[in-house]
Image 1: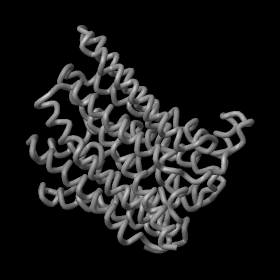
Image 2 (image 1 turned 90 degrees about the horizontal axis):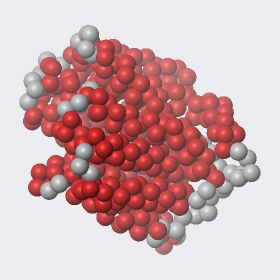
Image 3 (image 1 turned 135 degrees about the horizontal axis):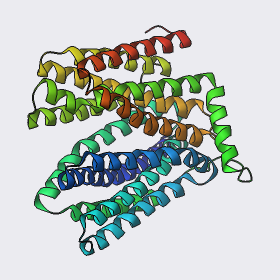
Length: 401
């Protein structure tokens, strides 16, 4: 019994390590591209173009990727996605010295960003659907928490590494690091033997499978409710979570270490949230864990909108980030536990579409709004709306916090 348990643990840890290594390289390049474009052009139009190309392709491909994750080998899909991204990065690495015009170089980087976004959209539902193939159901929350912790550490370290490489080296060096980490990650994943999955019918058209996945997701009361709340949560997190740098610069001062402190505290909170979920495992009721995280996050959001002191803001951001990981871990675990194994890829594809769709929508709404009214008001308003979303979730679930 102990030998069998150690066997699945070893395979799971090896799988998580392989994904974190590839994530590390991808994060370095992602940060480097944005910084490179920003410093090269100082153009809001180019930055907006790269932001759109980072999310829109992922949103569009997520629907198809969910079907593929249910229909084909998830391990092969992950390796294929990583492989395509690596080839695109390698081509960029090789041709970059031959490009002399900035406009051509930026266009080439734009094309690489689109390919990377498509690859991420294919990879994400497959990765989430692999975890329940490896991990027994009673350990899912803990291992999702462990995964969240490691990913937060990687996201914490990647900007620092990217900054160091760009300071002492060149932008091409970051591309080379991504190629190396991808090859190592693919090599490790190739050594992981996954249990056989229940495949969907390949004779049915992909569009029919997409419709079936959407119909299944929203016909299941629990999964449908979680996806709706998850989409609203992503939308309403934009002001406090993704516009934090703008708030800090406007309210507390345009000081570099302030912005750095916010990033460090945010990643530290997410890492601690992952540790908390990994050790505690959440309530027996996953929805109660989800609702608690959402409620805490909504209160922290309101607090960050009215905090007069930067240190207090950092404390609130720290707790906010812990709650953020609680919500993400609980959402992933609920789908892994409740969705039929033959439908998990499509449900996670829909979840990925919610994230990559609602995030840019939120930026499009709240970004211009922040130029005509105080951002603090917007953050407080989004926090109050998140409280109402929590109440909706609790009423629907017939649970009390």
